[in-house]
Length: 215
Ligand SMILES: Nc1nc2c(c(=O)[nH]1)N[C@H]1C(S)=C(S)[C@@H](COP(=O)(O)O)O[C@H]1N2
Ligand SMILES: [Mo]
Image (cartoon, rainbow, N blue to C red):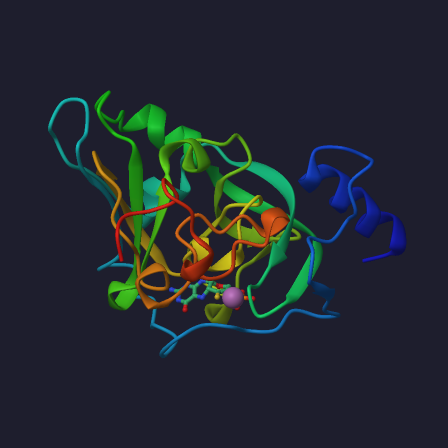
């Protein structure tokens, strides 16, 4: 991870060469720390499935087993990871299944405005549909060409490059399509409902009308 990779990743994420490479208040972390609440789940391939449920266009639920899910077409996205505790990990290449592939395979009803991304042990994070539908949002199986390790989310984690990293659950198991917003795990516990690092939307007390449901 050299200097040029870092400045490139900053330009990519900020959408313009004039923006700084790091969101305000962040510092670069060498290496890749492990950050999460609770234990690391054990992967049991025979019991793993990825579900899409809630307000689908046809009212059906969708379900993939591990073999089926990982056989979906892969893509890769270069993106930084910004933790709200102020460290950033720059210049990762995430390989996996784009969120848009899931939206195409399991279309949401036109009334859907938000999604809840669900992970093992009931961890969840809510996203605006537009954030989930970004062409850079990806369900990652790999980082820099290698399978994710257990502590970093194997077999699957979400990466939403333009939001703080808690918006990307590790050990993700499904997506719920919602016709109204609802707070996920950290969003219920004092973190900002939207979580844009470039606007430093760290905590829920910073929310403005329209940023999220009443607390
Ligand atoms: N399931 C789950 N996913 C999670 C979290 C968590 O507590 N549980 N923490 C988030 C936070 S706060 C961060 S910063 C990133 C950290 O990812 P890493 O441990 O791979 O660096 O994971 C996110 N995904
Ligand atoms: Mo974080």
